Length: 368
Ligand SMILES: [Zn+2]
View 1 (cartoon, rainbow, N blue to C red):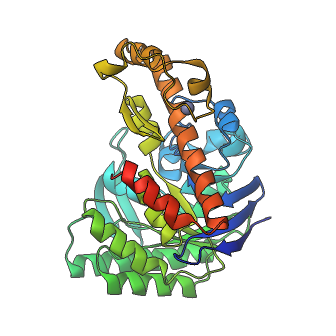
View 2: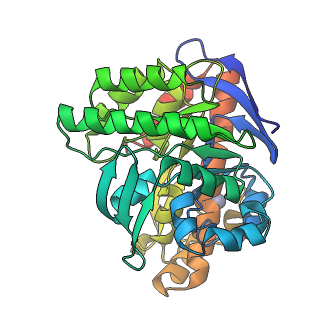
View 3: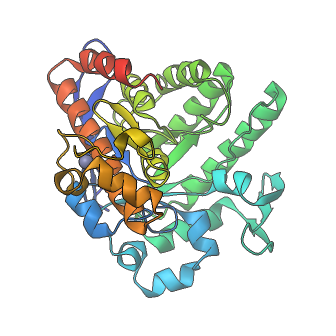
């Protein structure tokens, strides 16, 4: 396994940093935003589109792929990279969050989790080792430990119990580590800072290849999310990648990077694109608004994506209002390019010691 992470430079005023993540399927410059390809596809775009945009790493989901099409089908193709036609790095989420949010959860015990499939209602029992075995078969570059994503609100006792189970599962996942893929531990502990600290320190002692912050943005207020993020990331070691899961908006990304996060993911750019919400350097555009009906300008004059080079806002509005499939495609291409450009400018700003300046400029436009 050709896996390594090298921190390269730090911002002086914040904890933002630059790094390089190396995997068997390629190198990723960090901080990076990872588009979500839960079912083995980033909705509405082809791997070729992703390549053209310059996407370096995708997110897949072990829970979804295990249920459908099933691991044997993917194994028969030689793994997830070949199955989905994506030769670059892939991180697979274990599915802890999806088991809790999509399936009908039956029981969470130290031994594992019992739930009903959200597809056919069948009862399934998965141990942490099963989830690692699934991810090994998928052949992702980075596998995530099985964790229980604690709901919100939750009492201190409920959160502690849940965090303790995630910790036991993490230990078992680490023991199962096949050495052919990097394995990240996931810090839980809800909104309780002492539990977050305990979870982080416990996982760091297990010596994972990287550390993720899970269980945020599950209903708590934004200032709580940011406060827990700031607090927790301080316990993550310098020499391993730090991944803030399920964040987010451009403002979330700036905040996470300022706290030292190297990796982020969210469905926001792709889901918003399909709903006609587009990100530009001038702010958000709701393409269905009547003011764009005769607008011959591109979405974002500074954007170099296929959509902005070829089409006007009026055409994009027409496609969206007509319910055309092309609306989803062109909108997704643009939003992913916006995020890609955002990360490039963040990395450049860190390198040039003007990250805060860029953050403040963006926050004026994207107040969330
Ligand atoms: Zn564009």
